[in-house]
Image (cartoon, rainbow, N blue to C red; front, side, top):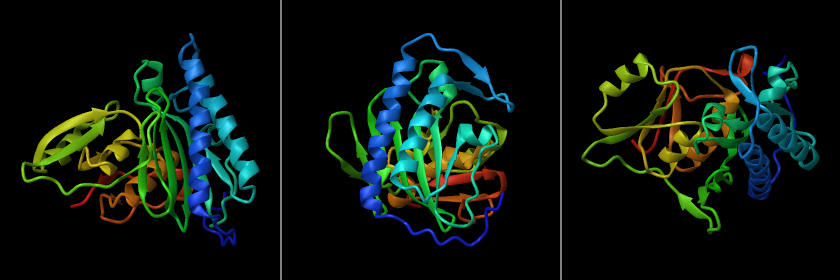
Length: 264
């Protein structure tokens, strides 16, 4: 797979595209909720991670919609990639799609699973939509600002906060917290730590409900791209443990360890 070639694909208008992606994510969320309310089967992929028909049907809807709306932009989607169907991205813009991030939360009937659609250009996330099917909340970036819409409400802008004098709020993975995470958190001036599943961790930092999210367990690019875009538009950052910005289009689409931060 060639991920570093030269591509000439131009970006569409990001404001218009963000509106479209929000609609697609909400539609995918409705498909997921139809299955969430039934007795569904859970299977295991080659890497032992869980997958259900909800992942597959939501991804099919998203991929079909993106291919029709922006046919020149490749789509790297989790389940297609797991099946060996990752496209050539050739250095140009491409989508990263995780149709159901937090499948463990989905299977456990918790609320913290999300639909994620991110757009990458020049190896960085320039647009992202994160939708929470159970609550109906949506977070997104439009290329300039970050936004949140609660179920039935109006869009409101979100921004990261400067940590208060009383200490930072850290947010950690519910399912993948490890000793390295605990060691990192022990070195911070913390007022508290909360555990959350899925890409919601980035969104909580983006809206100022938390200040830092360290991740020292494996992730793939589709796990992070959409929410990374939201956090970046809200004023935050995502860097590796060596201080370099987290970039996309890496071989096998695997991320190194990273730390997501708000305003520091």
